[in-house]
Image (cartoon, rainbow, N blue to C red; front, side, top):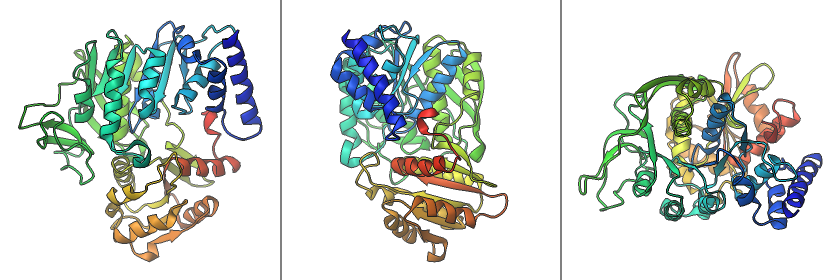
Length: 461
């Protein structure tokens, strides 16, 4: 009866939240439900016949989860999923309550939950997952998380509590993530990229987060750098090196804003995949989703069809009709991710018009010093115009000044509405606008676009 009351209260709270336009009803319902029934998450997740999959990492959680959901649904499985991206325990509770009858019977077969990095230990304890997917660790929201070593230690404790029969799917190209996973007693499936689409691979960026071996402290040597500190690495001191992944991406081809293609090699099978998700970071996300799906016994052909059918999540490669022109919204929230977003934009457009929106609310991180680690110099010789907006618009304009962009090419608009309109007017016929926001700035801009009828509310995606 306690669970039934919690589920009923969660549904009522979700309805009222949307009716009053106070939010999407993705977090508050779970908070209320777990106050009424503290064991709700553990109880409902244990009733999922195919178990629970948890996905965590600094970048790519929402896209990886959405890609895996598409694969599972293509396989005919009913999925209980925190699709709107509410990734704390309250968001997981909301998704479970939404997917249950009042008697606590689950309508789905498998739970699929993206999980905030700091929440992973509690989520593992509550859901006892059959699969955990670890994507990457980058500096992000330093005021909330601290340096990535602190998150790594939390993950280490979470993995120590993981059931030995659980499968651990991890990114072999991220040395910190790989080091965390080396002692797991149960089954593991590593994934990674065997090549980079830019040829020989870049040198480590100055903002790379994991330069030194976590066993002996020597600097890693790289034969290939793919993204940030990820790639093919080896420690010359103790010999710790990138493991050979069970699922790897070869023949990677980026099509700018139009997506990418690759061949995934797994268990002796070659799986050609194509996705509309843009950028090298999304190749990693698709590869991670495929590795998790294969660990769940999904057929390779279904993996390929599920990936092909996956549309971008809200704000993450989302295309928006602005009335006569198209905008591409690419969430950018830390140095490694922002650099890849900039490369994606410049691969798609020789002289783009860019709208950058920077907020410093709790969900973004109050410390914006990370802007100085982003290589905005990439825009110096290419961007035709940049409009900056958000709570820290002036800070962004200053960073662009130091990156070498002239004042004539940079304009500041404090309101999202006017920023969108100004950027729209700067476009020439046939051009696309590139919108690069932090998390809450993305939500604010989407709220404006929702009022204009250009997009749906994020909870409806």
